[in-house]
Amino acid sequence: MRGFMLVAVCATALYAQQFKFNLDHLAAKASESVDLSLNGSTLQFAAKFFDGKDPDEAKVKKLISSIEGIYIKSFEFKQDGAWSPADLDSVRNQLRAPEWSRIVGVKGGEGSENAEVYLRSEKGKVTGVAILYSQPRELTVVNIIGPIDLEQLAALSGHFGVPKVKLPK
Amino acid sequence: MIAALRVEQIGCEFDELVREHQSMVFSLACHFLHDREAAEEVGQEVFMSLHRNLATIQSPAHAAFWLKKVTVQRSIDEARRRKRRPQVSLEQVAEPASSPAPGDPMLGETLRRLIATLPEAPRAVIILRYQEDLDPSEIAEILSMPVGTVKSHLQRSLTLLREKLIRRGVGEA
Amino acid sequence: MDWLEQELKSALVRKEPSPGFSARVSNAARRPRIVAWPRWMAAAAAAILIAGGAAGYRQYQGMVAKEKVMLAMRIASGKLNRIQEHVMQVSR
Image 1 (cartoon, chains in turn purple, blue, red):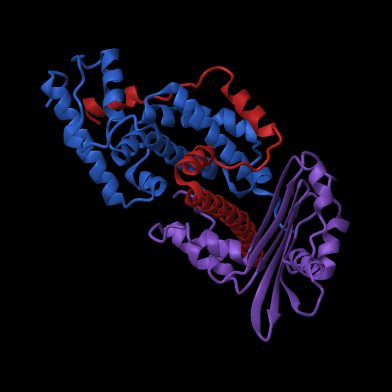
Image 2: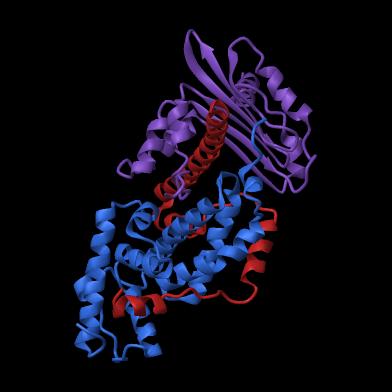
């Protein structure tokens, strides 16, 4: 019985995000890497430590109240060519499943940045977001599980010490 | 074809941005904190933050604006951490020990010390106005405060500084 | 501009940092960086753990979780913002 429970827990952990990232091999080549795995209970726990009276923190607290998980892998490299299109293809192929649909695709030329945003839907409701972002020396994959408001998430840019992207007059 | 990254568009690498703006960043922090060593630490943190956020910089003007804003924010954070200057009302600002005359280099140091004892908001306003020659609307943008508040801080601070100095026989009424 | 404002301009003229400042900054930027927690967290964590026992440890865990969430938000919103800008640029 204990063995079965252990396997069940491991299986749950492996599939905590909505698709496999398969990018761990890039960590050794990266000059900087971020690996975040925040499940629902971690998010709920963290929410208790946000100050509801601080406007920025209140926004984040509200945003994460409906999220069930955030999984991010981000790598920065010192040189071009450290990651290959095949690395992203292994993620992209999983996002071809019927519950996923691509809503944005930004394709720059060679040596430029590329980005895709996918939404996961079930019974007409958003249940997840995937963001694939790449530059010659950066690769970032984000999976947010739950009914996230993309507008609200994008609007957070401009807080936490980073000024709003607003040119002076 | 999508435009290239903005850092490439503005033709600046990080090192160039550091060289171009180090004096501005350091001076803002130094005048705010009245401490060269602390100002260099803040300056280094600001540029590290710039390095992490380089992809969000849209133009040379945006870089300058971003650096001013973050430098002031970090300087305020540092001042609070160090608690080198208790928060006092403008009317309680300490008077300088000596009475230098206009044009006397000591007057500059006296003014810098007085400024460093101002509460954070008026201090930031004065420094941005006279170090960077910014007008109130530009200062308001950087400090995320209404233009009226900026003007009020400016007026009150100048009035107080003037009174303090005139009482000591410095300058004109 | 009156005499005081002139004096303020002189007093607040820009200064240079110590020699080698820009080189130190550039070198620091080039160093491989592991995402580390803010310095204040280490000190706060020690104080909380010493003073608070189990409750203190929970507080520390909460601070760590909060920092992770904020980092996640910064990364995700930053990328979405970049994508939005590109989409707006193309649609002009």
